[in-house]
Figure 1 (cartoon, rainbow, N blue to C red):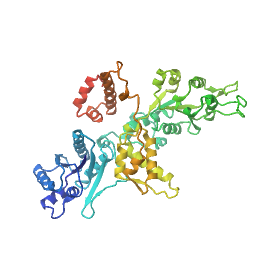
Figure 2 (figure 1 turned 135 degrees about the vertical axis):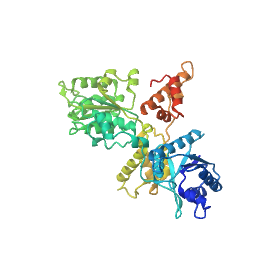
Figure 3 (figure 1 turned 90 degrees about the vertical axis):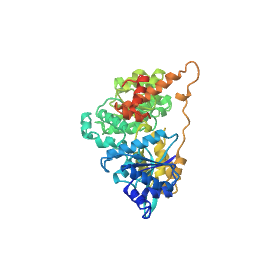
Length: 499
């Protein structure tokens, strides 16, 4: 359903008063030139004046028109405008029986109202933007920059960021983390934890789905640490042959085994006085886990074929997309090694949980693609159309930031023009196969308890919402799609969630 949402402005009321003799006004132009399935008009005028305007507007469109009175303290009250717009949009969304395609008209009303439409259309309610004028008529506004923030009241009414950092005991600003593009609360929390642990030499375990940026975090931690002048040595544990793990990690002497034509320095020695990044640590074979544990305990390695140990001074940062506690339960990962690595644990949120970050990442990644491709024959600098951006904002991104980058790169190749359109994005998206073994794929039979399964899902999302909203039940209810905090309280009581 395509829904036009806009504020009624003085130019619209004047157009109705004059019967359209001096122009239709911004809203009238839009309804006369475009087709919509429904129209929602927000206003801060007397009801009889608005009723007369709506009656004048009806002949210009076949779409049903609804008007929403939204009293404001003043026409530049950003917080009030934001709350009113969100309230109307959430109400319309709750009433809808299917997906809604939002269209926000920027021209009617005050500049503050247009600014709020931009913010909402870039984050919580991805939308197409319209502008109108007598000279150019109604046009789609392609906004090439991202003004969005996740929740405007948080920006306007939240605590001073410097005071917040001091209260959290954070070290001074760390430019080493500047490459991590983010705005969301979830990422701010993880970066704050990473900044705290960076100056220490304790091992760090970074958990997260594939494509969430685990190596990017590891490099930032290294650059923000006292070991920054030493080497950063990345090792993909899953890519090493099981027969060569010991030689790769700890090195070997000449003639230690067939093919060992010369001595080799292992990754531990190569990372001396620096950081050794053990990526995909969960893929390390069991035998290698035993030897790695001993090296971490003794702080020395013995090359294959040697008899004397070599002291090593390295900081370990490990990463995995696996849930290591589940791997331990399944006998695939050593519990003692886990606790040796997991002194500081960072869990990176998936992109679908990083509200407000996708728009920033689109711009940052496309800028990088344009820069890296500038010297390629025939390459044209690309930008993203409004419809393509909306499609990107709605995608769940199971492959996270890596998938977003690859999608933009493919779209930049497929697009013959300087603007990447929605069609280019659809061609570039790779639709993932449905997951197996999840909530929807449990085997039927005596071991399946649907009430228990529903309770587990409800408890998981209710707990996450309360944590994200910091105990604010009204906001938590919105995060899980419940109509009010009273309904949320009923769910909390029903599923015995601790608040």
